[in-house]
Length: 120
Image (cartoon, rainbow, N blue to C red; front, side, top):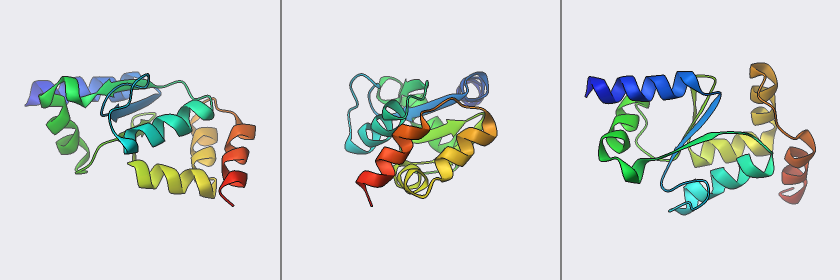
């Protein structure tokens, strides 16, 4: 299991934004993964997608790594952000913008504002 944890750690630390998800960003395989992909894509965020369905060790390993039971899981600059509900709440409250600003992750503020306006 330590090999899996090392792989996960290297992935999380080696990329600014990583989404562990079911499926890929081109073809999400669950609604929750699709929602997070939609938010990130709409905001213009570059991110690495890791398909947990392609590797059962990663699928369980990411849950152990984060001590979080569900997928998708978003990481920004090496830190666990949360799953679909948390990402949605952070998007609507503006906290995701603040996180991206604080960590230097490029995104479209206009797109983020449009998401909030559409959900007001």
